[in-house]
Image (cartoon, rainbow, N blue to C red; front, side, top):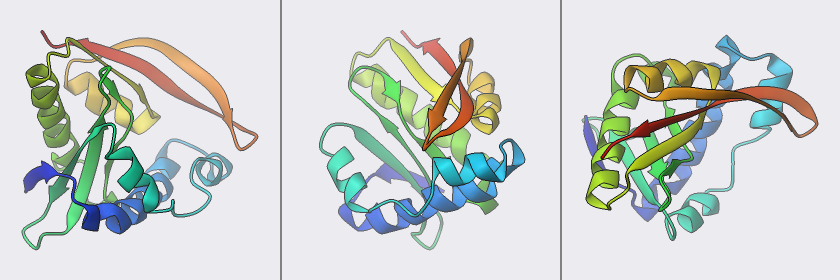
Length: 155
């Protein structure tokens, strides 16, 4: 596995990966109604091109050059996305992306990382040393769901 910076040609693959991850992995911890509210359809790939303008997106690729996961880092230390292809969950892809994001953050002088982690991602972030701050309850598309505010000092 190689972790590299986002390239514009990744946009469609990441949109597909996001939707698949929410539906195939999210269903382990959330109801079908919650999963469909979270990702009712594959997002527009343009979203990733726009996000690449103001944040760092790292992409994990397999030996064939296909994306198997991605994560992003905003300039304030917020990690907005960390998603893996469903068949790659639990094999170290997410941990590797998270470690790479921490390296990028340190080089940028960011001292505190924070994230709103899903139920499944919470376990990954705990393994990387993130501390649970709060459980958040909120509505997406009119459906109640929860995540966890977590943070980690890296400096």
